[in-house]
Image (tube, rainbow, N blue to C red):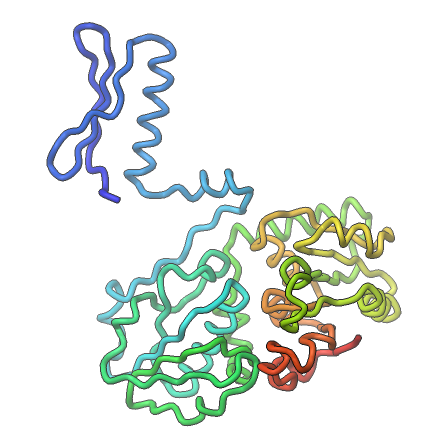
Length: 358
């Protein structure tokens, strides 16, 4: 889209208001109105809209229209920081497949491999992870990798790929795949939690306020917080591929584990199928269902809890990984002898300190 450089509002001798804008050196008519109250109102709205295009920041309007918490991405362009980069270091990038949860796996692997081989990591500037976290990694296009660079393609999406143990640190590298294993970044977990997967300030504030209001409403100021993620939706429709959903008894077993361990527990359930969850799961006084439609805020709420009960999928997995307490996962995912099951090695996919139950 051509950037508007200037706009002009003028009143003609016949009381018409003319709004024009300039692009590519020429002036173009935008709106013509007869002067009057309605005219001034519409003219003001038009000027405001054009001004927003000019400053190129529709963050708050977009967030309001989509019922999302407004955030401003960290912009760390390679071109702005190139002079500070050690050009002798090899560079490393990774492909981004899937959605937010998949991208978090891929980004974490990028950080892990960059640390292991002392390489410079680079990410694309349009990555959705930037909408949730204050990512400190430089942003730039794939063309920043210098030829000839090496490509490392994983063999299975959710199994540790031993090819990363033979990355040549003297050449730029490109990782191709989903790379869904905690083993890729087991040595940088603290760094991931403390520096990379840090929520944007507005999300942190919104999650904190949400939880505090919930504590006040429930009169449970000292309760241990346990988040539960219920993944259904597309997973219900794709069972033949191995995308199993957790059965109802799983949730009660997992919740009872925490109820027995702590005298006061408050469960926060986040889900992409609220009607099913409220119809089939626990409605005790210590249970609350999130009605938020902002997936980023739901994630912020879950990782602000003390412990986590996860079900299926990468979004749920990362809610568990970013919680610093206990994590219970559904041991029936993925279903064996299916497309997804054959791509998964559970010992590589689930961290050893997590508890799997059926």
